[in-house]
Image (cartoon, rainbow, N blue to C red; front, side):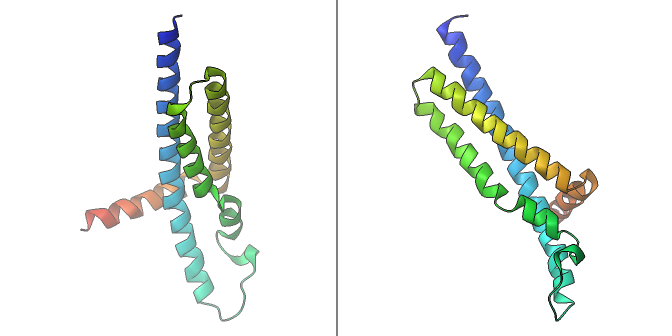
Length: 131
C-alpha cells in the first residue's frame, strides 16, 4: 500500500463518517423535535407539574439532550482533519469520532423506536410537501 493509497483511504473514511454523522444528526433533530412537541402537548394540558414518568418522552429527551451539539462537534472535528498532517493523529481522531457517533446512534435507537423515528420523519416530509 502506497502513501497515496493510505491518504485516499483516510479521505474516504472521513467522507463516509461525515455522511453517517450528518444523517444521524438529521434523524436525531427530527425525532427529538417531534418528541418535544408531543411532550409539550401533554404538559400544556396540565396546570401543575407533570412528573417525568408521566411525560411520553421525558426520559428519552433527557438521554438525548446535548446529542445534536455533540454530533455537530464531531462533524467539525472531521472537517478540521483536512489540515492535519500527522497520520497517527488523524487516525486517532477518526477512531474517537467514530466511537462517539456509534455511542450516540446506539443511545438514540435505544430511546426511540424505528416506528417513531419514521413517523417523525414523515411528519417533516409532509410539512415540506405542503409548501
